[in-house]
Length: 295
Length: 258
Image (cartoon, rainbow over all chains, first blue to last red; front, side, top):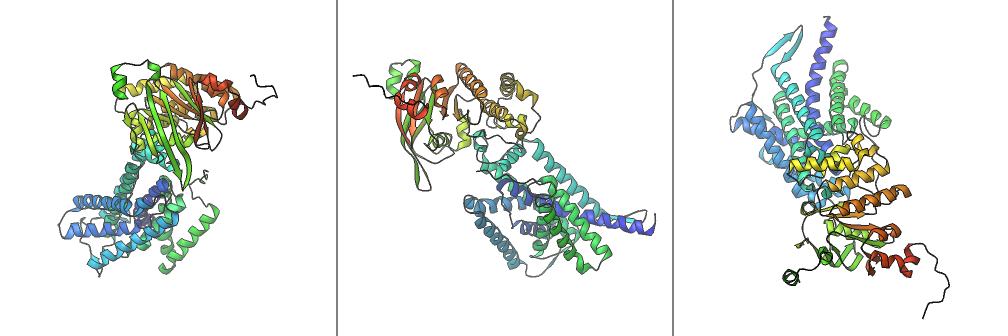
């Protein structure tokens, strides 16, 4: 292989790693929007809490990778349900803007709560033995392999749950119109809680992987990553699960490719401009459908 | 009341499956129902007719638990007050909502399956699924299709079929004739009668008073949140007030006898 193609293959691999993490977070935004037509702006901070839970499990409890991941996902899921029950459920019939402001407030609360315990950036210990494979000049690390394959697995599981299980069916019914879902015998509040739990668990998994890939964490790390994942969800068509994954891969790809050819400070400028252009051309995102306003 | 009926069994026609008394519903301070009382005897078709905005849908929503209310709703001896909507289905009340309430992004099969959420009797679910498809052969052809792609008539069939999937003993129908062609209306009313003959009690809310009164054994006229007339379907069909207000008849200047 030529040196140029090796270089680009390496970039694709790097992009896949970043995109997988964005995708896991983007799914949470999209699921909650799909079911409540609400943007859960605290979601990026749930991701951050996930990274800190990973840090705690690895340092305080001295756990290896798999238990750390499971513990983080469970903790994040509980946090997601707690946020929904305490902060969003009481506002379900309030104007949409109240819920959005509340979500921003919850995000700030999580950041400052974490800040109270960890005012300085923390170093996350290595949980995965670092092995590097040389694939004809392209290097693949054990961490990259785990991040990419684990994310893809989680996405496949989620896709199965949403498309093939009764709970997924109920979620899709609620996203169409929740007014009459109770008439089917479906407990809507429970399904909403399950949605938040799944979305937050995925963000927790993303937090764990991010903390292992970029092992210096701080309470504000969820802001930018959260925004990007949110944008990925919008680009893919918010409310659409597969769209969120596609959006994340576009976003991660563009980010890595921009840095490969331009000064790294241009990265976010190019990314945001591109996304802005895409939204102008396709306001409902790649797979999104214009919502028909029901009277 | 119950002790009396236990001591001396009354004929089936007077045993009510659903009792509604003093039902009041408010929306944002506006009163939609001002103390509505009526009963639905087991095994019969009862209709509530009235113009748009009379409060017909509010009554059904209150019974199904979708709307908070004051007053009393009892179903087969259960007081339904405070029972969450998804549990009411489990007790045996199914509703075909106004505008059908089909989930357009789900397939026809999924729409039917979703309605069995409260049921655990797998084998009988399969039987009921088959029975619905026998009754509505068009649905069988479209099982894997997104329900949103069905025609209005097919969607109405799906809505009724879906309600049957919960194996309810009381079926609430909210304007099943709305937006349907006259032929489809005939067909739907025939199906409603058939379902009733097979043992399901029906509470039918309609603007199409003519059709509704013809198949109902008992009927109530609802006007601005109050019941203003009650009687058998046949009686109301012949009532001049009903004729004038709901059947489009122009009353002639005939001299009133007596």
